[in-house]
Amino acid sequence: MAKMENLSKQRLKYLSKLRLKKYRQQKGAFLIEGKRLVETAVASDWTVEEIYLSQRGLDGFSKSKLGKNVALRKIPLFSASHKEIESLCETETPQGVLGLVRIKGF
Image (tube, rainbow, N blue to C red; front, side, top):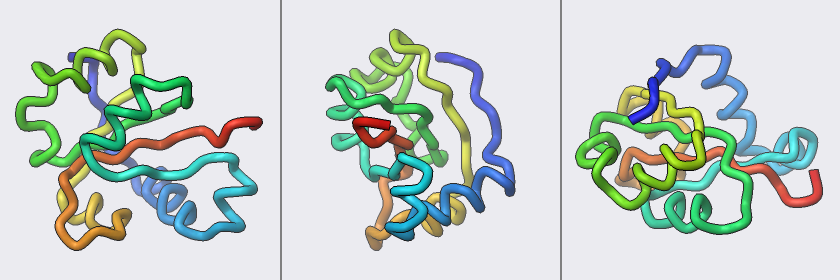
């Protein structure tokens, strides 16, 4: 598995702002939640810029199909606390996996 950095407070602020449509359009990026959705985006022609994982998301990550595709595409990985991931998610019980995806055309 690639080297994993910790999620900085500055990066967390940036990601939090992406909840607003105006900011998503301005920055040309959006967040996706969940293993299956991130896995689908990584395997597609969408540009996944970064992936954020909590401890829950890390369990079995390197051996999974997603982990192998991420390593192959050299997508940067960031570790985050469950609380940080929860603050970025809209689901009630997050899986601990988020992807930062570039909007097509940007």
